[in-house]
Length: 308
Image (cartoon, rainbow, N blue to C red):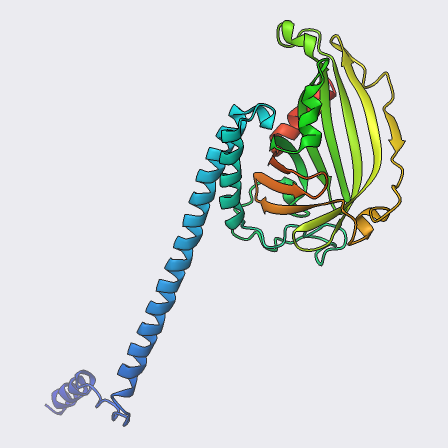
C-alpha cells in the first residue's frame, strides 16, 4: 500500500507543471509605438526604392526608344552623306533628347589627366547595364563606328568623284590614344558584284588625348598614316608597309594641343553608354554619332584581316 502511494505521488509530481516565472513590469505601449514607427519607416523606404527603380527603368526605356529612332534615321541618310534638311532636324532633335538622359556623369574617366586615370572602376555608369568587356578601362574605351555626322570636313570626303568613303571608325585606347580610321575605295567598284576586285586604302590620323573636364577631351594631332589594304582582291597589308608621317605643330594657341586648355582641338562628350557615343568637336565643328563594336565584331574583323 505504501509502495502504491509513493508511485502515485511520483507520477503526480511529474505531470503537474511548474509555476511560470513572474512577468516583468514594462510599458505595454512602447513596443506598439516602436512597431508602428518601424513599419512607417520601412514603408517610406520601400516606396522610395520602388520610385527610384521605376525612374531608372523609365530612363532606360526612353533611351532605348530614342536610340532606335536615331539609328533608323541614320541608316536612311547614309551616315549623313545623303541627309536632307528634314533628316538633320530629326537627328538634332533626337540627340538633344538623348543628351538630357545621359547615364554617364564622368565620361572622361580613365583618360589621361582625369581623376580616374589610373583605372576606371565603374564610376558614373552603375545603371548603364554594361555587359561588354571592351569597356574595362573607361566609358570611352573601344572601337567606335560612325553612323552619322554633319561635320563638313568628313562630309567633304564623299565629294571626290574617284574615291568613295567606306567605314569610318574611331579607335580609343585609354589612357591617351585616339585614332581616326577612314577607309576609301574606288567608286568604279560599285559596278562590280559585291566582293569582286576588292580595293581599299586606309587613312589613320593619330592623336593624343587628355581630359580637360568630366566631358571634354583635348587632342594633339600627332601622325597621319596611309595603308594600301588590298588591290583587286590581293591583300597588300603584309606586302607594302604603312606610310606614317608626323604632323607638324601649328604655331599659336593649338601648338600645345591636348596639354593646353586654350587649344581649340577638343571634343565634348554629350552622351555615352554601352552602345552609343555622341560627341561634338570644336573645330572645324560638327557632331558625330558612333556605335561601339562588340567583342564578337572585333574578333570577326581580326579573323578577316589575318585571313583566318
